[in-house]
Image (tube, rainbow, N blue to C red):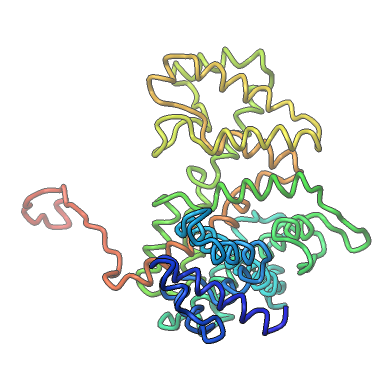
Length: 424
């Protein structure tokens, strides 16, 4: 679109803005003298719209039709509020799309890691737990970026956030490949985030790996559902370390260490082990009785926050069925569904508000996709990095934030007489 037509569109739209004050004002304006710059500035100031987003909307033929219709028949058709809302909503959509595309490019551009990371990983024994390696590498990355300690610069903070969101997937894939004795696969900037991650996991130098779109989408769903979940153990750790103004890499390393624990990031692994222990659908009733007798735990049920059905669990359950259409049905899913059916009907579990949580089905999906158990907490850490960083950034921008220092209440003796060492 040439500049002349764009000026006409913008000037015409400025008349529409004026119609909110009545048709007479619109009639008094001269289109040739309408200020394009003032209009863009007004939309940016009053509605928070990016100038490029405004131009993008005004360049659309349907917007021009609305504008011309309103000018020619100011007393007919939709009221101005409807036109304004259409304009603002579309501009925000276009602006959001532009931002998202730019963000995707930024993340893709930071996927590569320094070659020294490979040397660092080579120091780990073959077969080392991937999460242990990930925790170490994330903390060590602060030494690669000395300016990450400069938390007074918003630009630098954004840069390191983008680096961490991008590189955590690359590092995770490198850890997996090292633990299996496989050659490293470099990131491919032409692929999407999850598609690229699967490529780095499963590709081979002499083959062309093409991730199945259904599996890519399943991984996207799981990553979205695991991205953030209020003040859990690892998030509190992230904020606690970050409150000392430690760099984000050190803070992320600590948060990942908290996630490493079996009560947090290893919960879906515990579910998988339980299902394999049950072994067959016919054994579910007897296992339920053992749970009631407190002989064993029912893994993947109950949540500190959700006292009813975890809304994430139903999405993961549906995703599992889609994955099995590609990979073939995993017999563990039948055991899981039977466990869920009995538990949801049994007053022992209902009265205790024990419902399936997000970990109940996710491990089955990862297993079906060919991912080993030691990767499960790593697969949790990749999307949760975005949540950790969001919490960290919020804290860094809080003027009232101080270093974390939880209160400790002493419950010991009020007073004691000193006893000599030889008399103790």
